[in-house]
Image (cartoon, rainbow, N blue to C red):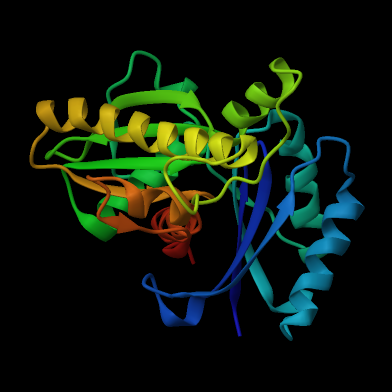
Length: 264
């Protein structure tokens, strides 16, 4: 079995996914895991964690023939590259400027575009077509816009839901930290319920408000959501019709095939 290990390194989580390359470019995700991102964690700590998770699913290191990485945390770039070499004996495919994507990037400085946003655009176009708006609910919430010509136009970056909730907790001395979840009712009957409702529906309102404006400019666009909180927020919005939690991992698989899969 020839497996691809896809690694999406975000500011909050490192997500690992396994694909069976023998099934071709449309290979489905076999399994995935989510680790906390830590800039202090060593190559060995990440490597041993990955091996333990894979063995729990009956996957051995020798079955990993390729590694594809998307990283938005620069200090972890060498750590993950070393992990691929040390624990799997391969040189990782890394999403960076110059990678063949099939998407023309029209922002002022394409080199500053986060790898995850580019990977999401590639996977979103492949999965849903264009025009398209991708909303990624991560540490930050990003809105990425692709036109009918499959050109990446740019987007918006907002504080993520957890960042917003933490700011409220930290700056208001009498307010407790609350779980981010769908409230039982709109009007809270105590402080915790009121905070949960305000955080949750306030964020839903922000997402819908931004999408209202984006769709006014691009009315034919489909809207897809990904990221750790997509399943919580997206169903309560008016415009998000597609939820793809594994969009970034799928984008890494697509880009690996476009750049490495044809090299023999």
